[in-house]
Image (cartoon, rainbow, N blue to C red):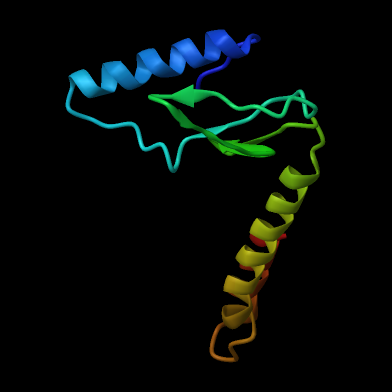
Length: 112
């Protein structure tokens, strides 16, 4: 993740990163590389090797979600969905009649 307060600095950093990767035989995937800005009124994006990077409103990095507008709604939704996914994976075991209730209780307390 690269960060800068000025668009020109970020463009320079990204170009230098792309050139460094090229020296080691690795290409920067322009289609997957995204740009996020906190200034929602700014219409332009940065360019790398003459290609515009795609703009995004949020970015997920190392279990943290950064949002362009600073709202935590996306992170909250992500955590709630992860909790539901974990709960759904356990319901099959919790509804199984062949598993003792004591073990179900331990698992239930661990999930909840």
